[in-house]
Image (cartoon, rainbow over all chains, first blue to last red):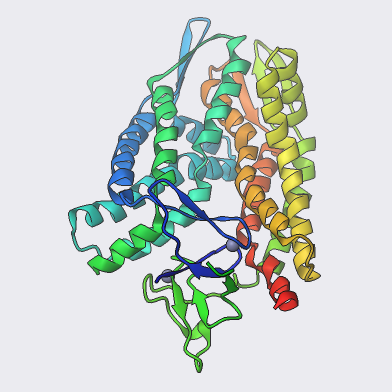
Length: 199
Length: 211
Ligand SMILES: [Zn+2]
Ligand SMILES: [Zn+2]
């Protein structure tokens, strides 16, 4: 018999058997205790690899291409951050950098760093610390909000000039569900048990 | 399955990082234990949860006013200058037929931050008074508050994209204004406030009353 705890209300209960894809709800506070995915290491790892490739595309190519009176201008994620920095808006620039570039990249890298050694049964002394950070980084990654921002900007600018989506925008559109899926299929309890086994 | 018992009162404690449930030997305080699985020190409740949450909330409430009053962006195009606050940006979207986007931006930028500040303050006060009023609903409110706050960043991102695209010298340029700074600070502060709050505190007085 294994005991599990609810980190929303501190209730302790016997771990119920749950089929793959099902979830257990805390009797006391109604929070989700866990979503069971026994294949979590393999599935999340595959999605994290895909997310990493999309993340590189989303950062390397222009998001939007903008033409006004024959002059074209392109915007990448980084060019927005650096334009803010040049204007002296250090706080805003830092927050945008943190939430759209640093946090998503860290989240994907941490997942790869934890899950790849588990899958291939390599020894990974840093896995424990890295997996602790997965949950901490999560709230700071706001790519889906950024996507809505892009749409609002498109509406605002479409009257002024010709504006076309760049390759990075399509990468972004794929990246958001890929990373969301990777995190939704992550079953921390299973990962912690696998980490413990390989110690 | 028997209804659950609280890990604080019982012989068990759980790791706040990896959720491992551990038995606590009788002569040892839980705080002296390290987690056998992830190595973290056991913290039964987040340290200084209430004062830290209150401080972040107060700072966020103060910044919320300038965030909405000051313009967030100034666009110059073809010699014509225009300052936008959050509200005037929403009105622009609504007038140009983008009802859905206008509503999203309004809810995300104006409603969500103030709602988040008010709801977290109410949770804070209810915990401080050791209220026993509908803990399940209060727990649910916290879980919702935790996830919606991020949407307030929308306008800051819009400004970022405008700044990145409109640097065409005399034709068009964009200046970021103070409102955007306050705005991004509000988002970060409310996020920190939600993270500092410990939802387990909602349940502590309940245990005392019932069992
Ligand atoms: Zn619970
Ligand atoms: Zn632990």
